[in-house]
Length: 225
Ligand code: MN3
Image 1: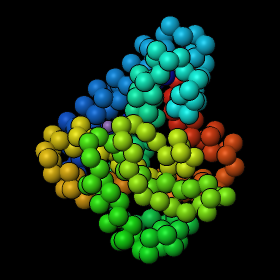
Image 2: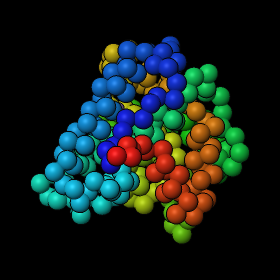
Image 3: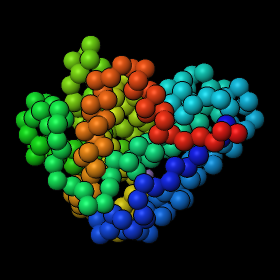
Image 4: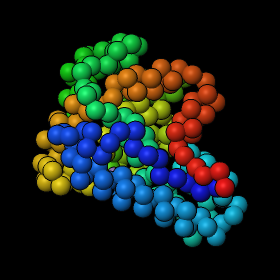
């Protein structure tokens, strides 16, 4: 089974003017596509890994042969994170979250406004390339919401947290339009946030681990032969 580049759930120009079509084309069709291509290429000679899912590869780095471990880790993270990121945005979006997520945000951050400020500041402060997350800790660890950044393509799943929301703060996500003004990108990005999807992800954090994995894995596409 080969890993596949998932199609964007909207047109490349759909997030204009906040995220321009040229950035989206390069980001999806070149950057994300190259993580998938690199992954399939490096896994080619390791048949024992051919049936492993993307999430397994992300979380079982120590079981991947040493000679390809770093390459697999970098590319699988790129693939998983971007697969999540595209669904995390949509056209005609923005506004405010609904449902249980609102209560949790108010409880853990004080207000939506304070949460957004914290998320934007974390993204702005990240040194180098990485991602900014809203993640939920395990229920037996309090189940609280946290904002933090990861470098490279690391993911909250790697520390046992459930990723609820994410923004890409690698330069390739914004440089063509915003150049070095990362904060402008971070602020504009709120206009394309798909709160409906994020609220669903938060609801899913209440599901059993098994159900969560199944839904999450179902979004990360693979060829059947
Ligand atoms: Mn990216």
